[in-house]
Length: 271
Image (cartoon, rainbow, N blue to C red):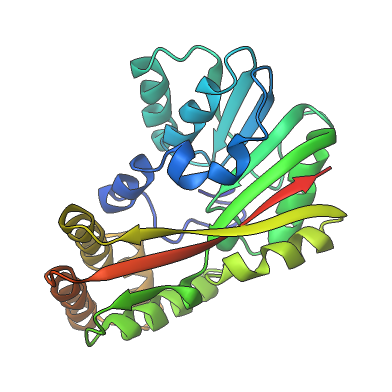
């Protein structure tokens, strides 16, 4: 998720249609590029941890280490604490934090991780500089972000391309960069990282259950979440137009042969 409200606000907000997506994320489906680099004793910071599903997974892979999750939204951290408690994970803690102003000392962590964070920031390079500061020399900063411009789907249902255009306009008006995946390497270089391993991976939604889930949450975001509020406030769309885009998502999800692919850029940066 995002830095504090004094800096900027999270485009999606914290509607359940957003958190349903976050709760489905795991270390395996969202941080696989990092897993081979973890040590059982690693001290790890998870920036923008949200409801904590990835964070707790990472903590389980560092059983003799320590994991800290930070997020700007105190209310979502309540879910993260409950997630850790339900899984009896006692080497993870959660706290409110700002990615631009982390409270930790220089070199405090072996690994600093951020998933789907940089795309929402007005200054992703500054965020990477701050993540680098709290990472020890020789430690790792790992990031992963989607790229909306590279997403593709089938079939080509009318309204789906208009959805992408709307989303990118709202995201950029909020100060973010929705096509972040392709820019990660450039941002890391600008932040001063000399040793960077870049890779890419994707989510694919193609089964009946996946299509229904993905289409349903986007249809709901377009009519009920903060994304809808911003689109209306910016006069990018009205409620009728947003309902039409929600219908496009529902129509897409009804096809038996539908699929939707979300490409991600990802980096392992050595400090």
